[in-house]
Amino acid sequence: MSERTGLYERLREYARTDYYPMHMPGHKRNSELCGDILPYSMDITEIDGFDNLHLPEGILKEAMERAANVFGAEQTYFLVNGSTCGLLAGISACTNPGDRILMARNCHKAVYHAVYIRQLRPVYLCPEEVPEFGICGGIDPEQVREALRRYPDVKLIVITSPTYEGVISEVEAIAQIAHEAGAVLLVDEAHGAHLGFGHGFPESAIRLGADIVVQSVHKTLPSPTQTALLHVCRRKAKSPEQECGDGIGMSFEERKARVKRFLGIYQSSSPSYLLMAGIDRCVELIKERGDELFAAWRERLLWFSSQTRGLRRIRILKEEEMRRGDGFDPSKLVLSVRGTGKSGEWLYERLLLDYHIQPEMASGDYVICMTGLGDTSAGMERLAAALQELDSVLEHTEDTPDKPPYDPNADMAHRSCARILVPEQYSWEMPEPGTETERLALPDCAERVSVEYIYLYPPGIPLVVPGERLTKELLLELSEYKRGGLALRGMEDESGEYLNVRRQ
Image 1 (cartoon, rainbow, N blue to C red):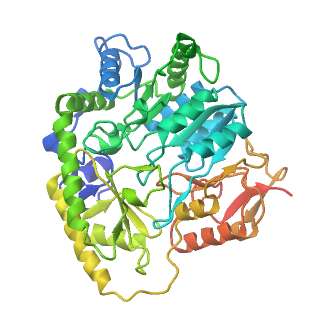
Image 2: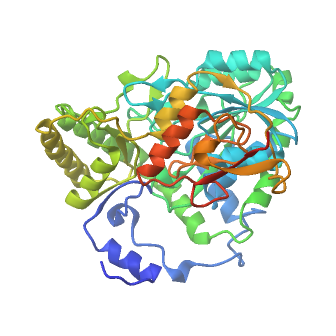
Image 3: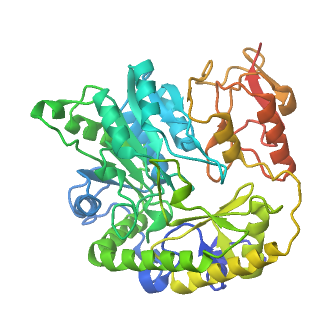
């Protein structure tokens, strides 16, 4: 590729290369499936005949109703600011300032931002660990029940299912527990827009009792980056009285109206018609050819599994590694080199540089390759062949006793396995410098309470949130992580050397 700096030209050049995308978006640049790229000639604003996303009465209203029908929701909204704006709107709609919420500790940073904006009081559900892979598992329903017993004033429960690595919680059981306690359940299903369409893929939270479900259609389905859906679901009431309200004393219609109001705040007032057309085209494709396309996708995944079953050193996450009760999304390929003396970064670079396969991300000792509806058999064959060759290389490589590179997701799982946590002194605004806080070098922050976030992107799950106390073990791991050349995000000090903490 040339050294041109213009983004448009750079993208055009990249599109002509042979790099295969094992990452989002789910259309995988498959022009045979999706057609040509949406052109400038179709980029418009709210002109006559094309409706208004914030007051839909015509073509956009019909498109969202069509999406609700295809996905099985009562009401569906198009999102052009990604799942982020859907999470912000959904959480805001289901809470009032100062409310207590129960949230999975491995939620995306957007959920933490909603807590900040609405000044909510969070209680954290810390997932168990998938020990062989060092990743976070699902949320145990009994852990939810216990948290609600201890904090009966919880108004909203937020969980992520599936996770970035494809782990699925027992949503139906959690929904039942939430509703019995008078709480609302919001599921961040950003990575699961393809769920619920059969052919071996798990059911969607939409049909499992969640009240609000947010999905990124671009992650696994053929839709442009930044496109997402927010689904508002009607509870299956056993009696008319049960439908009258939920955890915050509002009816379904009131909850729906609040979602719409907050979407008007968090969504752009100039929504892209190209993005909305992409969503609608994706919905139409699933409606017309979904059975055929999902069956073919599943067949490609089964073929890949059969071809890689004999790998000896590279391990691929399977459902049998899950905690009892957790499910697994087979579209996520978590490729682990744990115990080989190699790192996830090594595997990532080999796939990228030697085989021109672009993975989604690398962590301490694993790589995530994301498949999607737009994948081709040729692409899956390239990945399987590459892994077979790399596995052969590892088979003849002497193991090293060195400690594997720091994996923040694994560290979070170890530190907070299946616990209920309440952050200390959660602060909503950064105090004036020199008053309630002080800036210290990271190694000097042991046993101090952070007033900042520390996270990695991807996946955007905070390692540290305001109000949490930093342990010596965590700080040591963070230092090792920095020495490995990976950047810490979320801190006021962009170099990642210093952190603002509560003054003692």
